[in-house]
Length: 168
Image 1 (cartoon, rainbow, N blue to C red):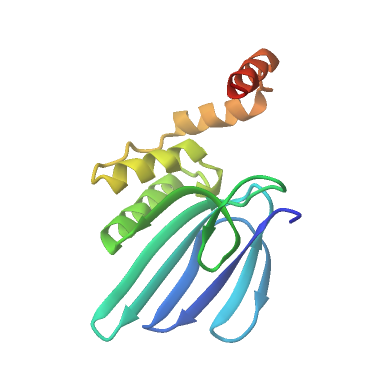
Image 2: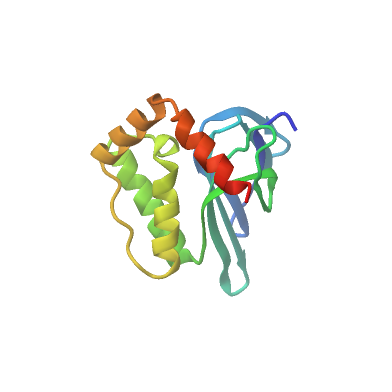
């Protein structure tokens, strides 16, 4: 695998909807009026929403916020996503999915692209929402700290100590 991820999108009105809520798409391939695929480059963060109905109403609501793996990185498998991704958030059930969509809207209201938000924030939101707690709000200060952390090279001594500790 050279890295990157492909997501299969489906839109069959009132039956099945798979869509991307945010993320930097590098290529879109339209297969039919109701089906297409989108590609994300290695390291790209995106939100993939799946919804399905049956004769009684909503049968499935899910949202995954994934980071496309780079070559050689581990990843989780997700239906309709090839090969998969580093799972930052994975929730099901409309109330939780709706809450994540509200969180995404709040991040966008700060003028921040959710694809650029700190991955640790998405993990925090996943953990809190999965146990019925409200996640803390993402802030501009938190985002600035994340961006600054990205500019700092890793500490070589800390890296050696971490790798030495994992050998035992």
